[in-house]
Length: 505
Image 1 (tube, helix red, strand yellow):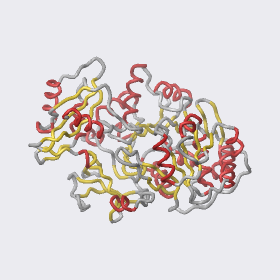
Image 2 (spheres, rainbow, N blue to C red):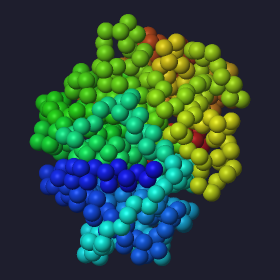
Image 3 (cartoon, rainbow, N blue to C red):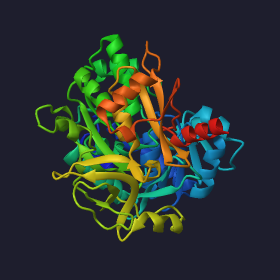
């Protein structure tokens, strides 16, 4: 089934429902949302966009992003949403690799891209685009569950990014799993798009469309903590996706402003490690509005989940362990832990996280070699390390490539980071391994001190010794003003390792 059928159905029965906003201004109701998407689909067909083709979206968050999704799906083509923070040359690679036929752009990004590609660049703020939307509407092209809906390019922290084939069936399964495992959605709710719509935030658009809810892109087009807090009070209830670093920033700003987040219904966090101290602080301030998901581009938003009541629970005897986990398997997947050969391990043992089910990708775009390495006997080999407890809660350790091996013993950086973050002088921290001829690797910590503090190595060392085994504590601490992060807020440990290499030289 084509995802665009959900929009078509809502528009017929609840066409008067408010649909798309920019800030406080309503742009479309659901009848207009469908009408203009269907007109744009006609214009795409006139430009020879056919089922199976690709249309790229290189745009900052804006109302037209949703038109780009649904008009493309209506033609039977797939969207290629591209992170707005990428360099034009990186974008050009994605356009070439994906075989996109045209690109929807916001004007600032289109100007940067013009010299890098010969593809048609259509400015979604221009008169030509408005004229395309005004074309006579056309029907939704039927699609199979296995047909391409979204071609997602990985963040590419090492090497060229790979295109993940995300199908209509995958997004539908993820959407329905959101209702089962994360949160409910009502027509009065609003999806608030601060995180990039090219990523997890956009993946959750279809379930809010299916339920006839509102869609709000902030006037700033990005993440502004005060703008969010004000919008929640005026336009709530709001639901949104955030990376853990965004949750930390929001908590800090809200506390300094004395704002408790009135109007925030749900913040789904994921996309990187959420440290126990950070989520405890956030829940203490905002209350039970946080749900956690664990997913990958290869299984978008749909591996495990920790519901709001579980995140907020402080009565269970093991609540801290559960809160430090990423939850239990979502209803549409199976999750297990395997050894280096993919053989399942007993409960409690650390190994590679493996997942299979409807939301798992069929493969990478035109990359059979990478597909064969990642999909083994029906299982997605995530590359993440973790263990399952007796109740099925999954606790992550680290990416397999980030595990530090010192003296033949595995040390998981996240465990060290969790310990350091309980010290009041530590605002952010990232732990990596540094080569050591005798021991294999040393543990090194890069620390962003909290406001009003300086790095005190002896104090942090004593703190670690009080919380974790002696061999796990960092041998060296580096103070830094900030940690290097990619466009999705993930810490770039490869850059931290490069800093160590430069110091050694």
